[in-house]
Length: 194
Image 1 (tube, rainbow, N blue to C red):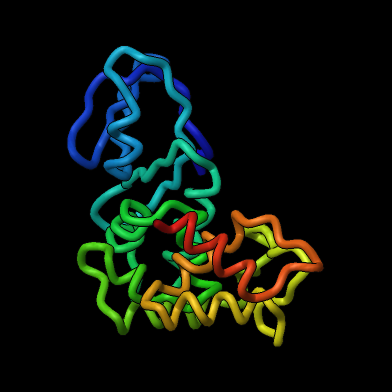
Image 2: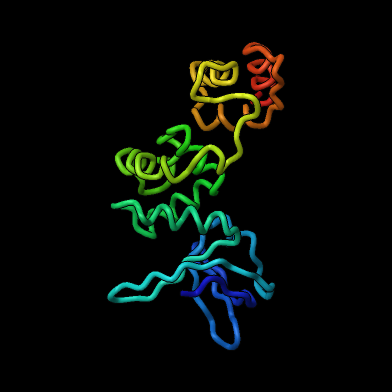
């Protein structure tokens, strides 16, 4: 297995980058977001996953190790191959994908090219146990699944038309105090969203 490659970027395309290491050029499939961050002639370290199939050995790479970890979790889901997983990672970074899974926001996953609601729901179902709220940082002083002021604020934001993941992200940014009411949290959240 090739865990990572450190070398010089010699070529960039829409979804691939070629990295020269010890005189060998490795073509690595990557997200457009990662490719955009690279420039020809610069040194880079890319975390890689080598997929071996009957007709090819294909490298997939990410600048962020967490993105690589989530990519590996995605390809374990039955029906999600590396191409679909890369499309999802191109749309959502690992943090946003974890939030979408935890909050069961299948629409955020469907935003990826070639991913329908059936596959998105399957990803959530199969990865829900593997991605815990602790993986993305817990919300201080609240259990989002219980009857707390934070979960009430999350529900209120969703009822106002925000997605589960949008609501979760903005609430996570707020420093919640034990004395805060649902209205206090909601006001702060709406200020951040507008």
